[in-house]
Amino acid sequence: MTILPSVFYFGTPVALLSTLGPDGTANITPISSAWALGDMYVLGLGVGNQGTQNVLHTEELVINLADAALASSIERIAPTTGATDIPSAKQGRYRHASDKWRLGGLTPVPSIHVAPPRVAECPVQLEARLVKVVPLGDGNEAVAAHVRIIACHVHDGLAVPGTNHIDLDRWQPLYYTFRHYFAQGERVGVSFKAEQ
Image (cartoon, rainbow, N blue to C red):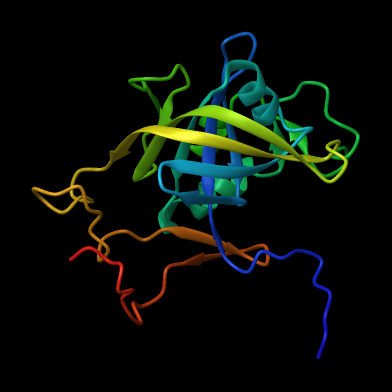
């Protein structure tokens, strides 16, 4: 059978991008189009998003990886935009929110290497800098932002003591699958590449 889904979100991690606007205001943008290779992340970003404009302007951001406990917080800010002038593609479905932090019940904490704050409630926080921007399609709707991770922060208890490894039995990332939120399921195997 051949089908044509309206989206191809077969399961991607949910991230909250924290950025700074031109006036220095911290913004949060939920995204679900991100993947990593080494210390590089590729982020699929809508051109009309305030967070995208902030990244293009400052070239700094934090990728805050959410866990399953944050699904309702994310959904509270998902239909909002930091842009005071709502882009035409978002009108009717989105509303302006001047303080997404308060709306989502989230707490900004200072970063070490970049200006945008981290989201305290996210168990993994990746400080990053923009390396390259590639237009997608005609470039008017979306871009692929290539960013380099320069610092990785994790909540106490999430790292295996004495190592640089995440405790996979404690890490419960939030996934976005066909516009539904899912927690990580049971472990079904281990790659030969896994560090033991």
